[in-house]
Image 1 (tube, rainbow, N blue to C red):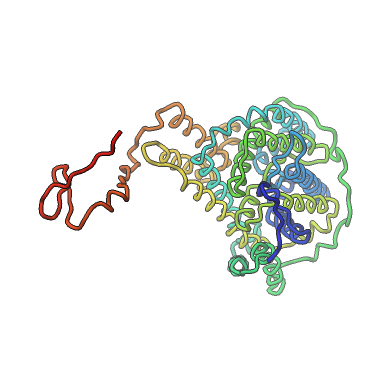
Image 2 (cartoon, rainbow, N blue to C red; image 1 turned 90 degrees about the vertical axis):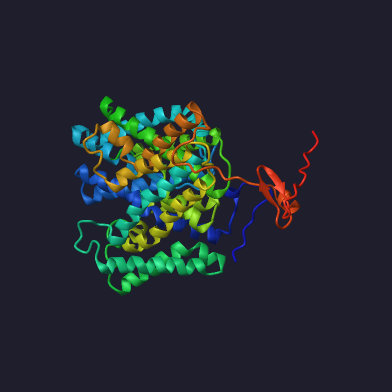
Amino acid sequence: MTKQTKAPGRRPEDERLPLGSTIAYGLQHVLTMYGGIIAPPLIIGQIAGLDSTEIGVLIAACLFMGGLATILQTVGIPFFGSQLPLVQGVSFAGVATMGAIVTSGGGLPAVFGAVIVASIIGLLIAPVFATIIRFFPPVVTGVVITTIGLTLLPVAAGWAMGGNRNADDFGSPENLMLAGVTFVIVLVLSKVRVGAISRLAILLAIVIGTIFAVIIGKADFSTVGQGPVFALPTPFAFGLPTFEIAGIISMFIVILVTLTETTADILAVSEIVGTKVDSKRIAAGLRADMLSSAVSPVFGTFTQSAFAQNVGLVAITGVKSRFVVTAGGAVLVILGLLPVLGRVVAAVPSPVLGGAGIVLFGSVAASGIRTLAKVEYRDNMNLVIVASALGIGMLPIAAPTIYDQMPSWFVTIFHSGISSAAVAAILLNLLFNHLGSAKRKNAFVSAPTRSIPVAILDALEDGDSVVDGKVVDKEGNEVIVERPAH
């Protein structure tokens, strides 16, 4: 079993593993989030009408800045970085808004300008935003963590079906079989009693699944050798940023959503790791998010935020060390500088990632359910809070077009199931547990369970019973009840 060193009294996330294990676990984090981190620049690049080479520059910049942001978040410097195992990258939260800015005529320079200004504002308000931690009791965090897992499961399903909805083989039996094989490999390896293997089950399953894909002809590495081997990010490669008021306002709404989601991810990973976070630590994590987001446009990329799928990896592997994620950040930086390595990782078949993703994302939901099990549901409205917030969070997942006719600001906030659930849970918790009576009963809550001290049962004998409020023996004689002296 891999030896781990942990000084007495240190936080779980400060655990240090051997170098080899640290790098391997870090690479596992990169493989888990790689498809998600390259998707936003790929989508925005296509909307902007960029060619394949220019989109490649966007993706390289995204990997490079994601790596630097991850290192800042995990290592931390004064006032910046939560020092938790959180992987950073470009979030989907702003894709629709940035696409709208591009198509409105501003192009990528207007997107970059909006990101810079909105992120600086987000940096200024981060300490105030972090004070809402007292409004994140287990009834709220449990809902958010569960929603994160449930929201990510459709991503795993899309990967398992092939990733590209326009492909002829999307959803084919071969793709589903490949995902199923990878899924089974994860389960088998997780059962192995050797800690180094069980903790690396996701990475090893992806490697073995990819080898199997090559054997059956479902993997293509022919394009790995095409393109440059090494490339440095070029500042302002797509022109100097421009600043449009409408774009800045819409991007600020995205920043508020990002702050909400990152706060939820910080609380989720702290719950999984078993460490406590306060408002100062959350503020440091949010500042790292905003600083990285403000700098990202300089190198041609977009807003940075914590990746929820990697929270699942922490839960499923039990590897809590933040330095493992730091190593993953270093790998992302290298991938940003060495596009050839990025092309190798990108060649991993989507169904393989989908098979692993089922376990990963399901484990996040399971962690949320475990948190919800700690919630007190008697004589309060917590059951209604959980039911309503989960329902609201699932609406955009169950019906992705449900808010298409709503105003753009509304769509930006509520199109994300995570932010929908977070907003609903926070507001309902405020309404019922802060502004209203904490003891209010509701129709969904069952009658409270009564209990009798064991000492009373020990004093009873066979045939004793209670008649008209008196204790009698089997002969019907009253048993004297001694009351404790005050």
